[in-house]
Length: 306
Image (cartoon, rainbow, N blue to C red; front, top):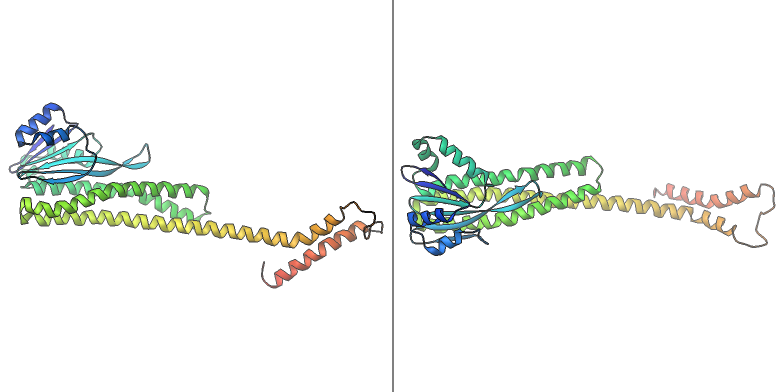
């Protein structure tokens, strides 16, 4: 447990809360036992609960897992009253909170007052701004992938790897979207309910949080639309290439068909075949076999079908 004590508010950050820390938290903030039970383990869903004297919310942030190559939800529990801002998490993966805590620890008390503000809604605002900016940066690796895929589609020959890259990026975006949708919804709820808890002066901060959340959401939707467009373009190019090859094979079959018939006819086991035994009979037969194909080729070329 770490504490940053300002003149007006106190920020308490707990990672993997122990029973002793939870009991101290219950006594300090006068929390109900039911809430302490919820804090003993990660939750299964997001929530925004408004009580008479405090707010309890569970938020999830998308975090990029480099090992698994996908975005995973990371839980952050927040308890707020008029004096205390409490953040509870169950691992160290939320880097912005780690950095924000280090920044506060390096400052004097007056510096912390400027960083956290003089009310808990301002402290929540500054913390969430760091986390939202981090979520926006989490989309950067997807943006880089989309740029590489765009270059691969329009500057090089499409290949099978591009299809798998698009599918992997789509999975990542959908995972990110699923997690961020719950966060987006919770911030909408917090904007409306928080005003009743803190008063009208908190509205501008909560509204600005929602607008910044909208920016991340719009950025996410832009990436998803771009990915869908790239996928459609890639499949169009593949279809065009397939149709071109099919057309070539069809034309070749049509041109060589007379030649194959003549040659097959001379392979039949019959006693009498034309031109057999005559001088230069092999050349005559080849000429007869190839003349129809040459005529068909000339006709198609004249009609600009080749």
